[in-house]
Length: 164
Image (cartoon, rainbow, N blue to C red; front, side):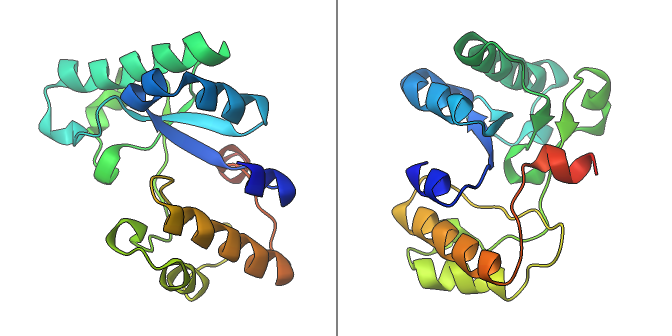
């Protein structure tokens, strides 16, 4: 997060509930630094393969953990694998957020490859999907930010893109 702060960039973090429980101080820091926090799920499961009740438990449990740590309910959800059950739109007030550019950063440990995949495909108002679980993805994010800022791009949270 220090790299984002140095670059004056606010990002959106879609969090797993189980990870929030393991690393509450990181969640509090993300929030304190002014980043947007959304729900991913509790255990990174394909929500469309679950019963409606089980899927909503994944979402609601994570939201409650985030609320307990930040004092704010999540307003956005990025379901794992991009798989959501449309009927759950009636069960939650969260807005589903997917992505425009997926460099498949989870499949390589080469930050330069990840960055080039994004830079070769990104356009105005695109949402870039990256994961923070590997150092290569984090380093790629900084390369992407630096290059796109040099090209005149600005970075905003998904809320700012969706509410434009």
